[in-house]
Image (cartoon, rainbow, N blue to C red):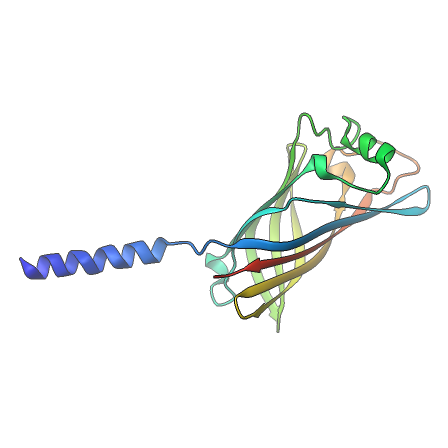
Length: 179
């Protein structure tokens, strides 16, 4: 009887710890974008990043990142432009309140350099995008820095325009507390 209880206790411990997820807290984030409009570079940010980061360099196959930002937080330091970006012509924040990013896989390049394949969803349109990034740890803090390009037309943002570039560059800088 004692062996059964001992075995059941060990089994319960292993199952619980095998499936336990280390919860992370985003302590700092900067999600910025830039795009050319009439030949001039327009920049902006999205605030309020929410993320579940389960990234482990020693276990890339078991790692995952799911993140989102509220589209209504778009800020280009121009209220009139921001209101236009929130309209149905661009992000349609009333209908599509979030932009989401969900990892599919990760590859280690060298040193602190990785590439992640992410499903990015904007306005209910999802596209697989490769995101090169660095990942560094110091104490119980981890930092992700990455940059990638996105074609706004793939997501129905901005329609057809002769003056607005199709491609935007997105830069992501995120700091998380790991314990």
